[in-house]
Length: 221
Image (cartoon, rainbow, N blue to C red; front, top):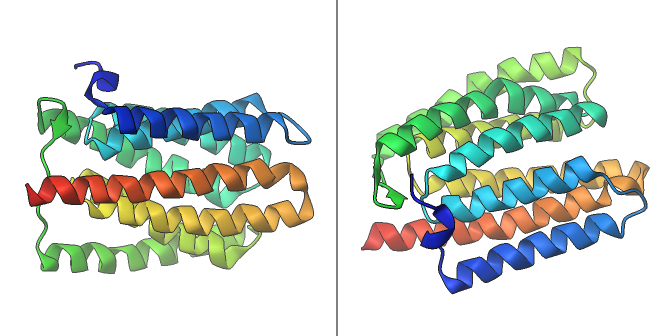
């Protein structure tokens, strides 16, 4: 239950501050300031920075982010994202928080080295999950159905690998960031007010890449 900020290096604190500043400024100078979006993005970035260190508090923040992002998605009629985060990302974040706290040593969670069989099993498991959510999204007349469905796959992989405590969690989230960048870019074409959300996920993407290399470095030690 240590203070997670104390575990960050100077480089990571700089990354955290710069990311938050970019998010705040991009949202403040947009055509319409949405306080909830700014708060959600700052919570999300903080979660990613802590996750890169393997700190279990990252999952507590992810729970908060999932709730806030679901509200934002509902307000903007992205029901697919709302269902994904409430029905999958939120429960998985809760389970991950429990697992990470139970398997933490000092300030960092213990890394699980998955066999190729387990990795393949998770990937195969994502197929029926994706298909099931596809029909739900289709019934709700979800816009940009293809990318919304792909987002289900990447979210499932990211959440599952997070629960399993492997560096592949960051790969899943980075792929999900790319999908969300496309989704919100398509929304921005219709209304530029969504453009700051695109930039938010661009920042998320680079933080997830950092998380991946940070975990790979720990795996090599």
